[in-house]
Image (cartoon, rainbow, N blue to C red; front, side, top):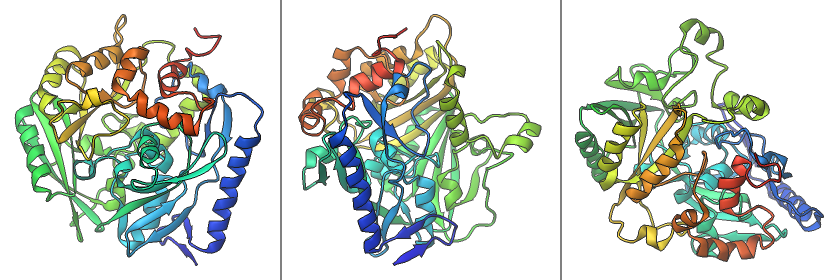
Length: 459
């Protein structure tokens, strides 16, 4: 059976022909890996730009490429079971356009339209339903994985559970995700957003805790504009709206947050409300926005940065980082941030602790009592000369038992890195899926190769 989204989204082919086509794609990739002659390293080519922070000296650009571009089909939308099966190069924009006509969407939809399903698994994507569900990976049910040797494995929480769990946050270093099945949730046509303003972090956290415990809201995120201005954005699905804002041209959603007590958006536009920028949107000039506002968004910016790498900064790059802080240690971290960093707004996404993830060490989890973390996102902060703000962030996080995503610049030394990320569980899977280290190990890829420090020409 062949169905097509009424919103102009991708075609969803649930026929046996589609299954056979998927198997042929997987076999072609597996055969390429089995027959390859080079020693690597290798990384992946997709149709969407990488959503890691672009870096000028990234040696991964010179890698041998495994082309995953045609793994881009939605294979099944099970409206009764509320699940979806898809290939990893499907973007969330394509996915939402296909599921919305059925009154369904993924629980977690990352803020940028061209983030892919595979990228969301590799990088542990979060968003404003994370206070209930955790990350996108926490809503997944099973994976198909191609190893570096060309073997095809299947895993789930019940079948090969360590492989299943360790694929999350592995950034493509354990194998190739070739298919995934994940949960969907029922939605309404619109989202009503209520913006609650708090003058103190304590009051802001009390608001977060209230919504976390009561579970009445569908969405929850916020922004910290100063030590005395915090806005909590509480979203509810609604069937009707007195008006609907899209924020895709002259005005940016992030600019509306401190100005409006209430807002209504079509569900699709709510999900991608930050596609033009989470805390800062350029251009600022109204005339420039009228001319170019529709053209400047996450996809166009990332494509430009990855094509013209010579324009990226040689040193002192702007700070773009997401950090995870235990809820009970947030005040301690933010006291330091207000004193030392002073860059606003800070995006705040509450994240439910769904399990003690296997990719973090038992030592990191020991003594952790919090059922909730706050993802605090700092975007576009200039680095003063002579300071390494990224390293200062890493050091501050260790003082509050926090961690960070690895999509940005990382300056951990190897011993510190593996005191946070679980080398034992990582190597147990790595020996099965990539024993010759074709895809690099996690530390080398994200902390050295990303900065060009693993090549003979390292600056």
